[in-house]
Length: 245
Image (cartoon, rainbow, N blue to C red; front, top):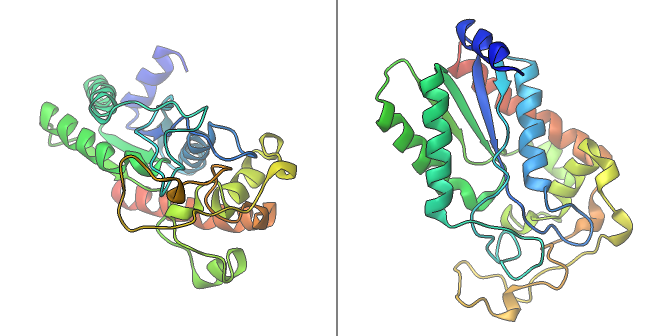
């Protein structure tokens, strides 16, 4: 879009979706842009069915954690400090609000960004103090799935969303969205020797995996991705349409 296109969109009352992802290793079989791709594709799908446009994505995220992203020790993971990430997001949101956008949604595709995304949205709203501006914060793109979809996709193989890093959920979505970027011949099943409910610094080897994915990537399929995608987009779209009438 040109600046005139964007100006026209603002004048017509359109809102904007800001996709936020990461550059993070996703095992042997998925690209490091996986989180960003899923966030962008989710934004485009929702924008196509609503009065929204899509901003360029934020492609660098907060630190990868061993229990949900594999950790910082893998080549290909490029993270920024939380305060840097928050400042970047505040700056972007300040500009969008100053340009005149009154309906802003943030689609976050990287679990470790969640608290920082909310912090940035809160600060940007406080900065502008505009009662006519509304910001939706989707700190995760998933609000759960129906029991039928969970059974069809995971069966007895669901170990929690943290361990779904580069596993059935993300791999299936990528097989549906960008199959040319997925190398299923390299996919493996893996899991940490020990899964804790707390983090340890430095992360002990027992909390890490060799591959970088945290569960059963080989159980993914394009068909599962189609099921997940439809429910995920429908859930996001429903929320956006409800809040931005």
